[in-house]
Amino acid sequence: MQALLDTIAQMDAPIDAGRIFHGRGGLHPGCEQWALDAFPPVWLLTSFQHATDAELAQIHGALAARWAQLLPDEPLNWVYQCRQAGQTETRLMAGAVPQPHVVTERGARYLVHVLKGQNHGLFLDMAVGREWVRAQAAGQKVLNLFAYTGAFSVAALQGGAKQVVNVDMSAGAMAIGQQNHALNGLQAGASFLVHDIFKTWGKITRSGPYHLVVVDPPSYQKGSFVATKDYLRLMRRLPDLLRPGGRVLLCLNAPELSAVFLHEQMQEAAPELVFEQRLDNPAAFADVSDERSLKVLVYRAPELAATRAVTAPL
Image (tube, rainbow, N blue to C red; front, side, top):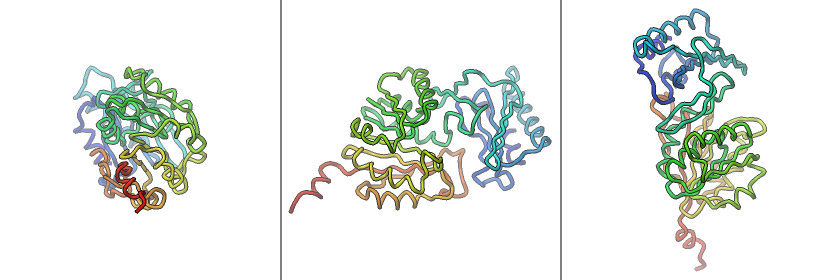
């Protein structure tokens, strides 16, 4: 784990939430089990294999030494989480976690919870996607599917969106989403539908059409969404949800499924949507294989004039 220790020795004091070390990207042989994230003022160390007490003591020593150099008057707060064989163990290793725990990202504020669960309230690898939405959103009507805690909605409203419809089946996540909007003074313009998306198409469609649709589902969550069977069902709905020229942001975080999977599914479900670009992932999430890493693709609906040209009788 020398690469992790070297990164800790050279890191700066973070301001925004973000990843510091991404062993899972495969660029640091022998460190694939480790990830280190900053949720200021707390560090979160995640291991995808069992870590020994000696390893954790060594990492603690590295964190303590660097923190003493960076902010000697501030306490070191760090949490360890082990995820192995479907089990999760989380331990507070030093200091404390503020309650509520609010972090920032490019001027936005978000509630996070690093002491429970595997999802901490803000997906750090989606930072570029949120920034893209913020840059595109001015004056737009946005649909945020699988909204979770509403980070895309916050970004859209900060970018000047006139309306965002958030849909997710988790009432708890949506409640945090509403708090996130309040933290940022963005209560106006956002609505929250606690529904199973596949049982709510009528209501979702009636609220449209939309300039921008964000689709950020779990890759595999039984009872909610399984990418290999549900993405195609969802894509078939997109042409009816989008305004002419509207865009969809498709997200997939499944190492076993490449971008080709999304392209092929789209070609079958909604071939009229045109691929525009794939967004880069944050530099901190660099991977030996782009196809293993997070896929964030942008598609555009045809303009009205083009649609008429195709459908008009000869």
